[in-house]
Image 1: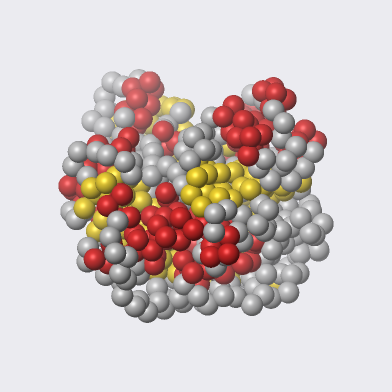
Image 2: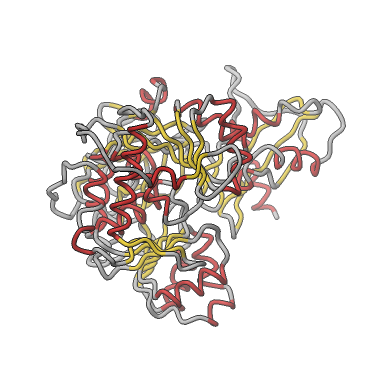
Length: 521
């Protein structure tokens, strides 16, 4: 059967994303739109609108054509919004990149996305310049100063002339974040103006966001969770975003207290800290109204502890990059079930299908969660095979296993997608396996998730040796080549890797062995 949202369908805006996000800028003027939490550096709504226009003007003057790609390789800073929406207003497409990426990882995404320009900060400039050379980037911009790059400030100067640009809001791609999807290596997810304006509209009413909302952005802007939930969501309603470039618990708690944060989007590891860390008691967090968890499964006991300690609403939602991302959310204006990711957001439909035959299932039956709605992506960039598997007859297949209760609340109970979720980040086993078997002392390798209370899951590598190598050497080798969240943290040496007749690694066999070992211990 097809499940529908309990909330009535909403009128969805068919306007360019930058116009939607700036719809209150003229009236809000000098109100802070974005604040750098550690320094207090502030961008007002008037400055935001002006900066976006100037960046658009200068990109067009540099020859950026409609649909061409600009990469943003930056941490959470207020200028991120100016860069992002300046590209959108110029008719371009952003590809947002994890600031933890190495030069090799950065090069791969730049090449795959076909990026023409790259925006970064001085700290990341060495990686950016190396990757730019290999990816044939036309110009690198740095937010500050740095040899070999153009100051980002150059994009904020000039006469502001901007030709008329015709935006096709339902077809023009405004951003391509990268996601592992249901399986395999990261792929460019093509999202339109309409996808993103729709999703902000779908979720912001459920969160009761408005001009009084002050939202803390610890989650990274490059990721769709913060991109929609914070960067676009808060600005579109006239709220204020307080950003943090890197996570430090004591600093974050101080910022909540200083700026009187009202809404906090988190991943489960941060929820754990809020619930258990003794330092939390040293701060006045009474301004918090709502803490919403996403990006990975939330522990119900931890959520309940957190709610008791902070004396605010604690709930969770669900989504994926391919859905812009929110598909489900517990609403502050609707009964909350802590164990559930909530009902469908407005204008969404879902079905649960049998894992073996694809048959539609009813309430309280486990199967793959599939979604249909105006926030679902156009597809993966240059990847028809992945599109064919993920988008089937208009339905987005998530790779997650769950069920819907009699009240229309959704529960995610397991997943058969292959990636590992470490602190909310997606880690593709295939990427680590490819890296491992490139080592001269490793004959074969497989990587699976193993549970970890703080991180959610850690990558564990099973290694077949063909030379002398220690577990420490395996971990050091991987750590030297990938972002920190992708590091292999557990190693086991084995005689062989279980595989199917076609040669596919049977990760499920290894996962079951690991679970059995844990049960025995």
